[in-house]
Length: 364
Ligand code: HEM
Ligand SMILES: N/C(=N/c1cccc(CO[C@@H]2CCNC2)c1)c1cccs1
Image (cartoon, rainbow, N blue to C red; front, side, top):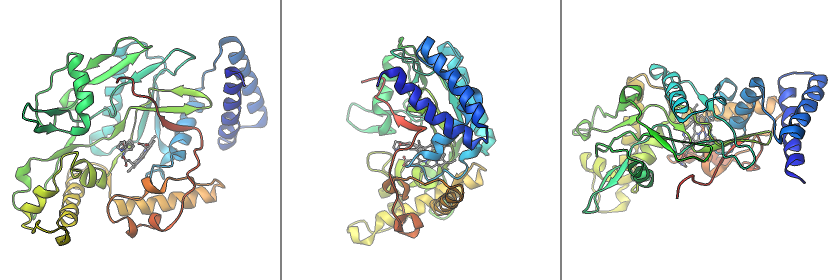
Protein backbone atom coordinates (compact mmCIF):
# COMPACT_ATOMS: atom_id res chain seq x y z
CA UNK A 1 0.00 0.00 0.00
CA UNK A 2 1.29 3.48 -0.86
CA UNK A 3 1.73 5.89 2.05
CA UNK A 4 -1.22 7.95 0.78
CA UNK A 5 -3.61 5.01 0.46
CA UNK A 6 -2.47 3.77 3.89
CA UNK A 7 -3.17 7.23 5.32
CA UNK A 8 -6.65 7.26 3.79
CA UNK A 9 -7.36 3.78 5.15
CA UNK A 10 -6.42 4.92 8.69
CA UNK A 11 -8.48 8.10 8.26
CA UNK A 12 -11.51 6.14 7.04
CA UNK A 13 -11.41 3.80 10.05
CA UNK A 14 -11.15 6.74 12.43
CA UNK A 15 -13.85 8.92 10.81
CA UNK A 16 -16.35 6.05 10.69
CA UNK A 17 -15.89 5.21 14.40
CA UNK A 18 -15.58 8.83 15.56
CA UNK A 19 -18.68 10.03 13.68
CA UNK A 20 -20.70 7.02 14.85
CA UNK A 21 -19.77 7.80 18.47
CA UNK A 22 -20.72 11.45 17.95
CA UNK A 23 -24.07 10.37 16.45
CA UNK A 24 -23.32 12.04 13.10
CA UNK A 25 -25.05 10.78 9.94
CA UNK A 26 -23.79 8.46 7.19
CA UNK A 27 -23.99 11.43 4.83
CA UNK A 28 -21.65 13.42 7.09
CA UNK A 29 -19.21 10.49 7.01
CA UNK A 30 -19.35 10.21 3.21
CA UNK A 31 -18.94 13.98 2.74
CA UNK A 32 -16.00 14.14 5.16
CA UNK A 33 -14.25 11.14 3.60
CA UNK A 34 -14.57 12.76 0.18
CA UNK A 35 -12.97 15.93 1.57
CA UNK A 36 -10.15 13.98 3.20
CA UNK A 37 -9.50 11.99 0.01
CA UNK A 38 -9.14 15.29 -1.89
CA UNK A 39 -6.84 16.78 0.79
CA UNK A 40 -4.61 13.70 0.68
CA UNK A 41 -4.70 13.69 -3.13
CA UNK A 42 -3.55 17.31 -3.41
CA UNK A 43 -1.35 17.73 -0.30
CA UNK A 44 -0.33 14.25 0.81
CA UNK A 45 -2.06 14.63 4.16
CA UNK A 46 -5.23 15.97 5.79
CA UNK A 47 -6.09 17.98 8.88
CA UNK A 48 -8.62 17.18 11.60
CA UNK A 49 -11.51 19.43 12.53
CA UNK A 50 -11.45 20.49 16.18
CA UNK A 51 -14.28 18.04 17.00
CA UNK A 52 -12.35 15.18 15.38
CA UNK A 53 -9.19 16.21 17.27
CA UNK A 54 -11.03 16.43 20.59
CA UNK A 55 -12.85 13.12 20.28
CA UNK A 56 -9.77 11.43 18.81
CA UNK A 57 -7.65 12.48 21.80
CA UNK A 58 -10.33 11.20 24.18
CA UNK A 59 -10.51 7.88 22.27
CA UNK A 60 -6.71 7.58 22.53
CA UNK A 61 -6.91 7.88 26.32
CA UNK A 62 -9.81 5.42 26.45
CA UNK A 63 -7.76 2.97 24.35
CA UNK A 64 -4.51 3.03 26.30
CA UNK A 65 -4.00 -0.44 27.79
CA UNK A 66 -1.61 0.71 30.52
CA UNK A 67 -3.87 3.38 32.03
CA UNK A 68 -5.86 2.55 35.16
CA UNK A 69 -7.35 6.06 35.25
CA UNK A 70 -9.53 5.91 32.12
CA UNK A 71 -12.99 6.35 33.70
CA UNK A 72 -13.18 10.14 32.99
CA UNK A 73 -11.85 9.72 29.42
CA UNK A 74 -14.79 11.62 27.96
CA UNK A 75 -14.05 14.79 29.95
CA UNK A 76 -10.49 15.34 28.74
CA UNK A 77 -9.94 19.04 28.05
CA UNK A 78 -8.36 19.35 24.58
CA UNK A 79 -6.36 22.47 23.62
CA UNK A 80 -5.65 22.88 19.89
CA UNK A 81 -2.25 24.55 19.46
CA UNK A 82 -1.50 23.19 15.96
CA UNK A 83 -0.96 26.74 14.75
CA UNK A 84 1.77 27.54 17.32
CA UNK A 85 4.66 28.30 14.95
CA UNK A 86 7.61 29.24 17.18
CA UNK A 87 9.37 27.63 20.15
CA UNK A 88 8.42 30.70 22.25
CA UNK A 89 4.73 30.33 21.36
CA UNK A 90 4.85 26.62 22.23
CA UNK A 91 6.59 27.30 25.57
CA UNK A 92 3.87 29.82 26.44
CA UNK A 93 1.19 27.26 25.50
CA UNK A 94 2.80 24.63 27.75
CA UNK A 95 2.93 27.02 30.72
CA UNK A 96 -0.72 27.93 30.04
CA UNK A 97 -1.47 24.18 30.02
CA UNK A 98 0.16 23.84 33.46
CA UNK A 99 -1.83 26.77 34.88
CA UNK A 100 -5.14 25.48 33.52
CA UNK A 101 -4.47 21.87 34.58
CA UNK A 102 -3.23 22.83 38.07
CA UNK A 103 -6.30 24.92 38.88
CA UNK A 104 -5.04 25.55 42.46
CA UNK A 105 -4.99 21.79 43.14
CA UNK A 106 -8.33 20.73 41.64
CA UNK A 107 -6.46 19.17 38.71
CA UNK A 108 -8.16 19.15 35.29
CA UNK A 109 -7.05 16.40 32.85
CA UNK A 110 -5.83 18.33 29.79
CA UNK A 111 -3.95 17.73 26.54
CA UNK A 112 -2.28 20.37 24.35
CA UNK A 113 -1.91 19.26 20.74
CA UNK A 114 0.95 20.78 18.71
CA UNK A 115 1.69 20.68 15.00
CA UNK A 116 1.78 17.07 13.66
CA UNK A 117 4.48 15.38 11.61
CA UNK A 118 3.98 15.77 7.84
CA UNK A 119 5.79 13.23 5.67
CA UNK A 120 9.48 13.81 6.39
CA UNK A 121 8.74 16.99 8.41
CA UNK A 122 9.07 16.11 12.15
CA UNK A 123 6.49 18.60 13.50
CA UNK A 124 6.92 19.85 17.08
CA UNK A 125 8.71 17.84 19.76
CA UNK A 126 8.97 18.42 23.52
CA UNK A 127 12.23 16.79 24.67
CA UNK A 128 11.09 16.56 28.31
CA UNK A 129 9.58 13.28 29.51
CA UNK A 130 7.18 15.29 31.68
CA UNK A 131 6.44 19.04 31.73
CA UNK A 132 7.50 19.08 35.39
CA UNK A 133 10.33 16.86 36.57
CA UNK A 134 13.24 17.20 39.01
CA UNK A 135 16.83 17.32 37.78
CA UNK A 136 19.39 14.63 38.65
CA UNK A 137 23.11 15.07 39.20
CA UNK A 138 26.08 12.95 40.29
CA UNK A 139 28.80 14.61 42.40
CA UNK A 140 32.53 13.93 41.77
CA UNK A 141 32.49 11.35 44.60
CA UNK A 142 29.68 9.52 42.76
CA UNK A 143 27.00 10.48 45.29
CA UNK A 144 23.68 11.58 43.89
CA UNK A 145 21.55 14.70 44.00
CA UNK A 146 17.92 14.88 42.84
CA UNK A 147 16.14 12.33 40.64
CA UNK A 148 18.50 9.77 39.06
CA UNK A 149 15.83 9.15 36.40
CA UNK A 150 16.64 12.61 35.04
CA UNK A 151 20.43 12.24 34.83
CA UNK A 152 20.59 12.03 31.02
CA UNK A 153 18.06 14.79 30.32
CA UNK A 154 19.64 17.06 32.96
CA UNK A 155 22.97 16.72 31.14
CA UNK A 156 21.26 17.61 27.84
CA UNK A 157 19.77 20.72 29.45
CA UNK A 158 23.17 21.74 30.84
CA UNK A 159 24.72 21.25 27.38
CA UNK A 160 22.04 23.60 26.02
CA UNK A 161 23.13 26.21 28.57
CA UNK A 162 20.69 25.62 31.43
CA UNK A 163 22.12 25.76 34.96
CA UNK A 164 20.31 24.19 37.95
CA UNK A 165 20.74 25.11 41.63
CA UNK A 166 22.01 21.62 42.49
CA UNK A 167 19.23 20.79 44.97
CA UNK A 168 17.25 17.55 45.20
CA UNK A 169 14.22 19.31 43.70
CA UNK A 170 15.40 21.55 40.81
CA UNK A 171 12.62 21.87 38.21
CA UNK A 172 14.01 21.16 34.73
CA UNK A 173 13.47 23.63 31.85
CA UNK A 174 11.13 23.01 28.89
CA UNK A 175 13.12 21.92 25.82
CA UNK A 176 11.22 22.47 22.58
CA UNK A 177 12.23 21.46 19.05
CA UNK A 178 10.36 22.65 15.98
CA UNK A 179 10.69 21.25 12.44
CA UNK A 180 13.93 19.47 13.29
CA UNK A 181 15.76 22.72 14.13
CA UNK A 182 18.09 23.08 17.16
CA UNK A 183 16.03 22.82 20.38
CA UNK A 184 15.41 25.87 22.59
CA UNK A 185 15.07 25.73 26.39
CA UNK A 186 12.76 27.80 28.61
CA UNK A 187 12.80 28.10 32.42
CA UNK A 188 9.59 27.01 34.21
CA UNK A 189 8.82 29.80 36.73
CA UNK A 190 8.64 28.16 40.19
CA UNK A 191 5.45 30.07 41.01
CA UNK A 192 3.69 28.07 38.25
CA UNK A 193 4.78 24.76 39.78
CA UNK A 194 2.42 23.64 42.56
CA UNK A 195 4.23 21.29 44.95
CA UNK A 196 3.16 19.36 48.05
CA UNK A 197 5.32 18.95 51.18
CA UNK A 198 5.26 15.25 52.12
CA UNK A 199 4.71 14.96 55.90
CA UNK A 200 3.76 12.17 58.32
CA UNK A 201 1.86 13.08 61.52
CA UNK A 202 3.13 10.13 63.62
CA UNK A 203 6.71 9.32 62.58
CA UNK A 204 9.19 11.51 64.48
CA UNK A 205 11.79 13.02 62.19
CA UNK A 206 9.79 12.36 58.99
CA UNK A 207 8.85 16.00 58.36
CA UNK A 208 12.50 17.02 58.81
CA UNK A 209 13.39 14.94 55.71
CA UNK A 210 12.11 17.91 53.73
CA UNK A 211 10.38 15.74 51.14
CA UNK A 212 8.04 17.16 48.48
CA UNK A 213 6.68 16.31 45.04
CA UNK A 214 4.91 18.24 42.28
CA UNK A 215 1.15 18.22 41.91
CA UNK A 216 0.67 17.70 38.16
CA UNK A 217 2.02 14.69 36.25
CA UNK A 218 2.14 15.80 32.59
CA UNK A 219 3.64 13.31 30.11
CA UNK A 220 5.22 15.13 27.17
CA UNK A 221 7.25 12.48 25.31
CA UNK A 222 4.49 10.36 23.76
CA UNK A 223 3.07 10.55 20.24
CA UNK A 224 -0.71 10.81 19.81
CA UNK A 225 -1.88 9.00 16.68
CA UNK A 226 -5.36 9.74 15.29
CA UNK A 227 -6.55 8.48 11.90
CA UNK A 228 -2.99 8.15 10.58
CA UNK A 229 -1.91 11.63 11.71
CA UNK A 230 1.07 11.59 14.07
CA UNK A 231 1.07 14.29 16.75
CA UNK A 232 4.55 13.84 18.23
CA UNK A 233 4.01 16.85 20.48
CA UNK A 234 0.85 16.32 22.54
CA UNK A 235 1.59 16.71 26.28
CA UNK A 236 -1.19 15.41 28.53
CA UNK A 237 -1.79 15.47 32.29
CA UNK A 238 -4.02 13.79 34.81
CA UNK A 239 -3.57 13.53 38.57
CA UNK A 240 -1.31 11.11 40.38
CA UNK A 241 -2.16 7.74 41.84
CA UNK A 242 -0.39 7.87 45.22
CA UNK A 243 1.73 4.73 44.61
CA UNK A 244 3.47 6.37 41.65
CA UNK A 245 5.15 8.74 44.11
CA UNK A 246 5.17 6.69 47.32
CA UNK A 247 5.95 3.26 45.91
CA UNK A 248 8.17 4.20 42.96
CA UNK A 249 9.49 7.76 42.63
CA UNK A 250 10.46 8.13 46.31
CA UNK A 251 10.95 4.40 47.02
CA UNK A 252 12.90 2.79 44.17
CA UNK A 253 16.61 2.23 44.90
CA UNK A 254 17.34 3.88 41.53
CA UNK A 255 15.17 6.92 42.42
CA UNK A 256 15.05 8.72 45.80
CA UNK A 257 15.65 5.40 47.66
CA UNK A 258 13.85 6.39 50.89
CA UNK A 259 12.68 3.02 52.29
CA UNK A 260 15.78 2.47 54.50
CA UNK A 261 15.50 6.07 55.74
CA UNK A 262 11.82 5.72 56.66
CA UNK A 263 12.33 2.26 58.22
CA UNK A 264 15.12 3.64 60.42
CA UNK A 265 12.92 6.54 61.55
CA UNK A 266 10.28 3.92 62.46
CA UNK A 267 12.89 1.95 64.44
CA UNK A 268 12.28 -1.23 62.42
CA UNK A 269 14.97 -3.96 62.48
CA UNK A 270 16.53 -4.04 58.99
CA UNK A 271 19.00 -6.87 59.68
CA UNK A 272 16.67 -9.45 58.10
CA UNK A 273 14.45 -9.11 54.96
CA UNK A 274 11.90 -11.20 56.85
CA UNK A 275 11.10 -8.35 59.24
CA UNK A 276 9.38 -6.92 56.09
CA UNK A 277 10.95 -3.56 56.92
CA UNK A 278 10.61 -2.53 53.24
CA UNK A 279 6.88 -3.30 53.21
CA UNK A 280 6.25 -1.50 56.51
CA UNK A 281 8.20 1.58 55.36
CA UNK A 282 6.38 1.46 52.02
CA UNK A 283 2.94 1.60 53.64
CA UNK A 284 3.84 4.58 55.85
CA UNK A 285 5.49 6.46 52.97
CA UNK A 286 2.34 5.99 50.86
CA UNK A 287 0.11 7.04 53.75
CA UNK A 288 2.24 10.20 54.04
CA UNK A 289 1.87 10.94 50.30
CA UNK A 290 -1.93 10.44 50.27
CA UNK A 291 -2.49 12.41 53.49
CA UNK A 292 -0.22 15.27 52.36
CA UNK A 293 -1.93 15.71 48.98
CA UNK A 294 -5.34 15.54 50.64
CA UNK A 295 -4.38 18.13 53.29
CA UNK A 296 -3.02 20.37 50.53
CA UNK A 297 -6.24 20.10 48.48
CA UNK A 298 -4.37 18.60 45.53
CA UNK A 299 -6.16 15.89 43.48
CA UNK A 300 -4.79 12.38 43.94
CA UNK A 301 -6.28 8.89 43.95
CA UNK A 302 -5.24 5.91 46.11
CA UNK A 303 -4.69 2.63 44.30
CA UNK A 304 -7.78 0.97 45.81
CA UNK A 305 -10.10 3.75 44.68
CA UNK A 306 -8.36 3.86 41.28
CA UNK A 307 -8.97 0.14 40.81
CA UNK A 308 -12.63 0.51 41.80
CA UNK A 309 -13.00 3.38 39.31
CA UNK A 310 -11.35 1.24 36.62
CA UNK A 311 -13.94 -1.47 37.35
CA UNK A 312 -16.66 1.13 36.73
CA UNK A 313 -14.90 2.03 33.48
CA UNK A 314 -14.96 -1.64 32.41
CA UNK A 315 -18.68 -1.83 33.19
CA UNK A 316 -19.50 1.37 31.31
CA UNK A 317 -17.51 0.25 28.29
CA UNK A 318 -19.39 -3.08 28.23
CA UNK A 319 -22.67 -1.14 28.37
CA UNK A 320 -21.44 1.00 25.47
CA UNK A 321 -20.81 -2.19 23.49
CA UNK A 322 -17.04 -1.70 23.39
CA UNK A 323 -14.36 -4.24 24.36
CA UNK A 324 -11.94 -3.10 27.02
CA UNK A 325 -8.28 -3.79 26.24
CA UNK A 326 -5.63 -3.62 28.95
CA UNK A 327 -2.08 -4.50 29.95
CA UNK A 328 -2.37 -6.48 33.21
CA UNK A 329 1.26 -5.94 34.23
CA UNK A 330 0.75 -2.15 34.09
CA UNK A 331 -2.81 -2.02 35.39
CA UNK A 332 -2.03 -3.75 38.72
CA UNK A 333 -0.71 -1.22 41.24
CA UNK A 334 2.82 -1.71 42.62
CA UNK A 335 1.43 -2.01 46.18
CA UNK A 336 -1.01 -4.70 47.42
CA UNK A 337 -2.01 -5.63 43.85
CA UNK A 338 -3.96 -8.72 44.94
CA UNK A 339 -6.33 -6.55 46.98
CA UNK A 340 -7.66 -5.19 43.65
CA UNK A 341 -10.01 -6.95 41.19
CA UNK A 342 -7.52 -6.25 38.40
CA UNK A 343 -5.07 -8.83 39.78
CA UNK A 344 -7.65 -11.62 39.55
CA UNK A 345 -8.65 -11.22 35.92
CA UNK A 346 -7.12 -11.32 32.43
CA UNK A 347 -6.92 -8.47 29.96
CA UNK A 348 -6.67 -8.46 26.16
CA UNK A 349 -3.54 -6.44 25.35
CA UNK A 350 -4.53 -5.72 21.72
CA UNK A 351 -3.42 -2.22 20.61
CA UNK A 352 -6.42 -0.21 19.36
CA UNK A 353 -6.06 3.24 17.69
CA UNK A 354 -6.33 6.19 18.24
CA UNK A 355 -3.71 5.77 20.96
CA UNK A 356 -0.48 7.07 22.52
CA UNK A 357 2.89 5.62 21.55
CA UNK A 358 6.50 6.10 22.50
CA UNK A 359 8.65 7.57 19.77
CA UNK A 360 12.40 7.26 19.52
CA UNK A 361 14.19 9.74 21.81
CA UNK A 362 14.81 13.06 20.02
CA UNK A 363 18.26 13.07 21.67
CA UNK A 364 20.88 10.29 22.21
C1 HEM B 1 -6.94 11.45 35.55
C2 HEM B 1 -6.11 10.73 36.29
C3 HEM B 1 -5.22 9.64 35.75
C4 HEM B 1 -4.66 8.68 36.53
C5 HEM B 1 -4.81 8.51 38.04
C6 HEM B 1 -3.87 7.84 35.66
C7 HEM B 1 -3.11 6.78 36.11
C8 HEM B 1 -2.15 6.15 35.34
C9 HEM B 1 -1.10 5.32 35.88
C10 HEM B 1 -0.88 4.99 37.35
C11 HEM B 1 -0.36 4.87 34.83
C12 HEM B 1 0.87 3.96 34.89
C13 HEM B 1 2.07 4.92 34.95
C14 HEM B 1 3.35 4.22 35.35
O1 HEM B 1 3.26 3.14 35.95
O2 HEM B 1 4.43 4.79 35.09
C15 HEM B 1 -0.95 5.44 33.63
C16 HEM B 1 -0.48 5.19 32.36
C17 HEM B 1 -0.92 5.90 31.24
N1 HEM B 1 -1.92 6.85 31.21
FE1 HEM B 1 -3.15 7.37 32.71
N2 HEM B 1 -3.99 8.27 34.36
C18 HEM B 1 -4.79 9.39 34.38
C19 HEM B 1 -5.11 10.18 33.28
C20 HEM B 1 -4.59 10.01 32.01
C21 HEM B 1 -4.81 10.92 30.90
C22 HEM B 1 -5.60 12.23 30.99
C23 HEM B 1 -4.19 10.38 29.82
C24 HEM B 1 -4.10 10.89 28.41
C25 HEM B 1 -4.98 11.74 27.88
C26 HEM B 1 -3.56 9.14 30.26
C27 HEM B 1 -2.82 8.30 29.44
C28 HEM B 1 -1.98 7.31 29.92
C29 HEM B 1 -1.00 6.62 29.09
C30 HEM B 1 -0.75 6.85 27.60
C31 HEM B 1 -0.33 5.73 29.93
C32 HEM B 1 0.80 4.74 29.54
C33 HEM B 1 2.13 5.47 29.70
C34 HEM B 1 3.31 4.60 29.29
O3 HEM B 1 3.13 3.73 28.41
O4 HEM B 1 4.42 4.82 29.87
N3 HEM B 1 -3.84 8.93 31.58
N4 HEM B 1 -2.05 6.20 33.96
N1 LIG C 1 -0.79 9.81 36.77
C1 LIG C 1 -0.07 9.74 35.65
N2 LIG C 1 0.91 8.88 35.58
C2 LIG C 1 1.64 8.55 34.46
C3 LIG C 1 0.97 8.24 33.27
C4 LIG C 1 1.72 7.91 32.14
C5 LIG C 1 3.13 7.85 32.21
C6 LIG C 1 3.75 8.19 33.41
C7 LIG C 1 5.24 8.20 33.46
O1 LIG C 1 5.65 6.97 32.91
C8 LIG C 1 7.02 6.74 33.05
C9 LIG C 1 7.45 5.77 32.02
C10 LIG C 1 7.03 4.43 32.57
N3 LIG C 1 6.84 4.64 33.99
C11 LIG C 1 7.24 6.02 34.33
C12 LIG C 1 3.03 8.51 34.52
C13 LIG C 1 -0.38 10.61 34.51
C14 LIG C 1 0.47 11.33 33.71
C15 LIG C 1 -0.22 12.04 32.70
C16 LIG C 1 -1.56 11.83 32.74
S1 LIG C 1 -1.96 10.83 34.01
